[in-house]
Length: 175
Image 1 (cartoon, one colour):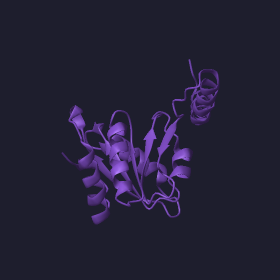
Image 2 (image 1 turned 120 degrees about the vertical axis):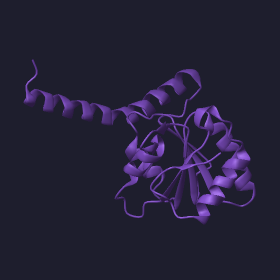
Image 3 (image 1 turned 30 degrees about the vertical axis):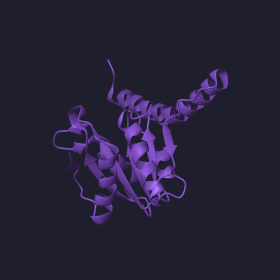
């Protein structure tokens, strides 16, 4: 039997333990890299984010294609980077805030749709940045839902589309 007070304390302890996971993930990755010479990038992986005005944030298989789009945009003189989220639960909120602190806008590419809530990463990222002074504008796109291929050219178009429009509270369906 768990009393209300015990339940309350257990939940607090769980939250405190989960808050340590992102830093532990990075620590374990550094240790792995020292032992094997290979790194998996830790909780977040940045690609060409130095001086980026716009950062694409996504997860999983979308990242390889997004890297290609970033390269195309950089070659065209656009200050765009990519932030790959490698750890979603718990979301590395503090790390995200630090990495996106000097960014003007964020474009979230979601393959994960939650009915009634939209893109899962989009919603989580907006919550993570909420209330931060000078927080970037966050645009959310549901792209590649169901495994639909999203070529680099489309991601370039999403960046241009986001720059031309105000962010919407809901995720935007794109093909």
